[in-house]
Image (cartoon, rainbow, N blue to C red; front, side, top):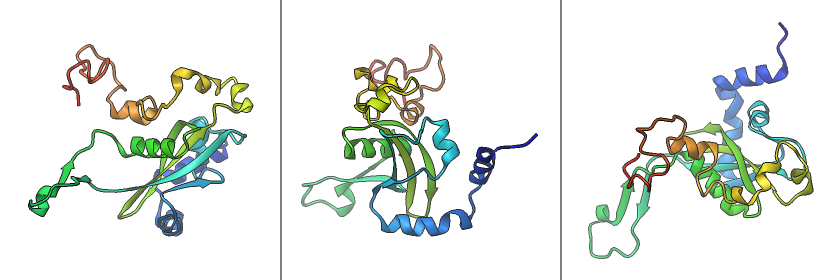
Length: 191
């Protein structure tokens, strides 16, 4: 059976070698943390997640620092340096964090989906597919018009995207799960 172009793109991304990403990672490190890209790097993945090359849809590349989520406690004076910061595991995966940052930068757009594109010793890189729900091209698209509804506003911040639902433990259903209907409903005993 003859295989199409998307099959070979998918196979190449299963184990991306140094030749595929090395030059790109050097450029991405030097750029901004959130950058608009002309076209998606992983076209097969983007198309599978809803990307279309039409007006109202853009792709952003987001750079995140790897490692623990260290947070400084501002205003703690007269203490040991070690006690002036908090290092806890954030209960969100990196892809969800990348989606939230993209949504906060482009407030008029909604996050459709996202996918991993690379990592180096210091950063993770994700591409986020963003949709403008006010565009007539999106409102008239039978596949994408669901995102124009008011109940889909601020999807990333509310934990409704695919990455967020995975991080919240909503991929599996069971009556014993403490993550349904929400963590707050189970008195934060979930994750």
